[in-house]
Length: 80
Image (tube, rainbow, N blue to C red; front, side, top):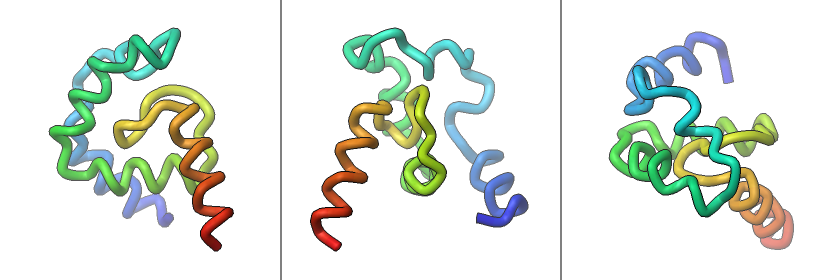
């Protein structure tokens, strides 16, 4: 994704201004607060796709934890 397009969706993200620690929980079970922010976000899908495409390893992106994103990638590989 071009830097300008990335910047555009990030500027509209619901997580802007939220403490970053919220999006880096120690366990998946502690990710509910971050997921609540993500699910109210208008650019959630773009965020998730960016994280999947860039193999983002840490944190909650687009409402998905790192474990959930790995699962999505595996499912997409099987479907391809």
